[in-house]
Amino acid sequence: MTIKIYKLKNILFISLVIFFLPAPQPLLAIQLESLPSPELTVRFEPPLKGIAEDVVHIYPLIKSDLEKTFGWEMPFRPAVFLIQDKEYFQRLTRNKLIVAFAAPEQNLIVIDCSRLHIRPHRLDQILKHEMVHLLLHHQIRSVHLPRWFDEGVAQWLSEGVAELLVAPQKSFFEEALLTGRYIPLKDLKHSFPTDKNNLMLAYEESRSFVAFISDKYGDDSIFEILEYLQKGNEIHTAFTKSLNASPEEIEDRWIRQQRRQTTWFIFLAGHIYEFLFLAGAFLTVIGFIRFLIKKRNYRDEDDD
Image 1: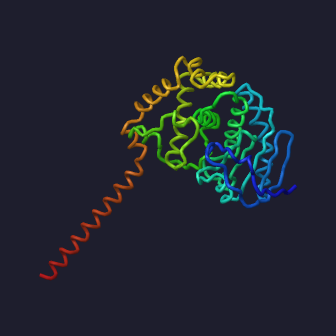
Image 2: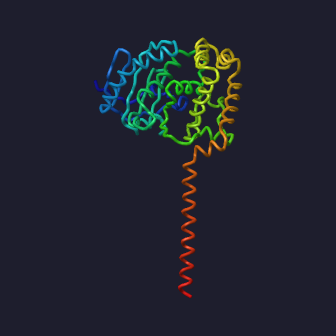
């Protein structure tokens, strides 16, 4: 069945990366085909039929894994939109870094399939990441789920994969720690920045903070915090009951540990190729200058 989408109306109001930005403006129509299954509906542009079939195949496996991991059921039936038109997708998100997003209020996931081939993205990891967000917001309704915890848990359970188009590169968090310009978690409670560097920093911090809790206090502590949130406890109470410390105290311990581990030596080692490149370029310039000086000296001798 082919359908025309002239507006996504409310279903695209909320995304994982731009939760609290204004809703997208009405867009031009695109044609989508539908591939229903007992557990979800997949809508896709015609060239993506193979990927749509993959989604139908892997969804039950990911759902079963998440239900076992959280101990929570996923009784809702989500819709997954697969988009091939990169420009159309970017008009929805208003951010070129985003490759997928979800709208928990509508149990909707939208994926930009034109860039799934770019490492480190894989369809199963991206789908799992978005499904974590849907599950968290389905189960935690009576209290606010902080943006940094929501995103940190999703990355933690999807092997560090986020919705951002990220290639291996420098660590924004390392640099922020060295310069003292990291973003306090309280500033990431409701939304993430929209500019590239701070957006990537927000994702790194969220992932690092949840990983710190897992390493220091155990995986069970994260699920315990989530259970307290599900029962209606605010984040401060959930942390205090689970870790005997407030989020601010845990954040302070996390920053202190990260600073001990992040030295200028580690920073330089992590950027060795950039420094070698700059050194090589500098030596090339020096060599060229010496060549010009020698050439001029030879010319002066010939004139004599």
